[in-house]
Length: 177
Image 1: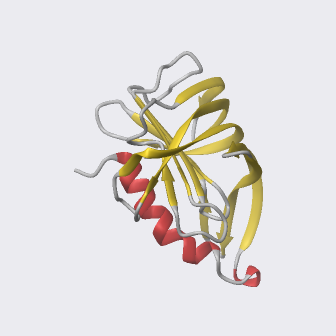
Image 2: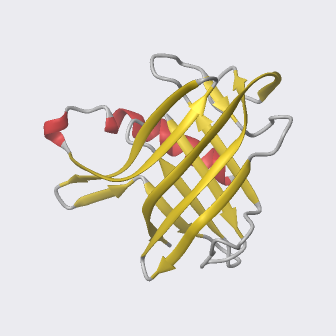
């Protein structure tokens, strides 16, 4: 079975061409923000809902999985930044410790994959808000750690080539079963 971050990265690679289609083909609504400083460069990106007719695709989701676990996935509008956290609960709160967390970042104009999986230090994540009500929720918090360069999509990170990242997120999300 593929790990959740790997499944999310697969979705990102598939979604990136969709998000890059001409604006007239899609209606895009910004719903939240992710801000971060990576290697001394600060950026802000949005989480969005992309609509094409009856097809609605949010980039911020809580996926309910088997065995009462869930996976929060926050993907930016450009597909270049993904934050994932997995919980042993279908209704995690700000006090619920994630069993795993990861960040993947592809800087603009570069086909470099910077990942927290395989970094020499674990990613630190703090949730100030994490609530689920029905099929919607909200996540607000911060993260910090190291991202290490991976040679290719899905490749292992080089623990000798890492850079610091620190950031925050504030977004509603949608619950998917």
